[in-house]
Length: 242
Ligand code: GLP
Image (cartoon, rainbow, N blue to C red; front, top):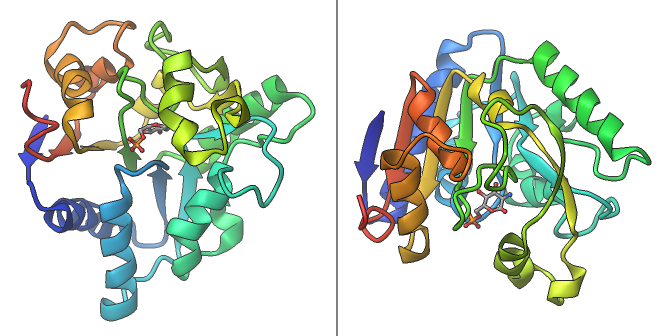
């Protein structure tokens, strides 16, 4: 595991953009990226958009898979993750919109949508670089504590803590969906390179538990210790308990 501690958000973004750009270069015909929503990967997205605009880095042959999605937010809802990723990242690139995939959060049978997405990932993968954030309770994607370390894509009920953490994006806590579809920890682990970004003191305990605590379902982020190729990009505050 490679751990980089960089206090400047632009440097963190640049370090991750280097990894993504290299994967695109090495991918030749086709590169599959795994994308996370949330504030953590934003510095990387900003830098990749800059490289696209200024340096001509092309995403025309890239396909992308989202980690997770809320259940029940209609198309166009500003907090639906497919909308968030379009607004903050893919909509500003030359990527084919049809090549950006996510779990179907409006499917009438969410459990079937989860199975379909797992199958799509198996066919479309492997993911070359999977970007990740971490929840304050150690979740990856929406794999809450207690998730099986080998889990696959499925429907998950959010913990109150996660709903409260994410309430800032909604009108009220009551507006935060209770259920989501998330790639499982086993699904995430099939990616060739996992890249976790975290910043701020609120992530310090989760980062320490994930990187240095026991490998345990009580901290889903600890699956990183299992993976042969992991890069962790932190600021000083998020690294404070290492
Ligand atoms: C959300 C997402 C995760 C994300 C995490 C941290 O609940 N499902 O994929 O990593 O919370 O979010 P942030 O980066 O905004 O702190």
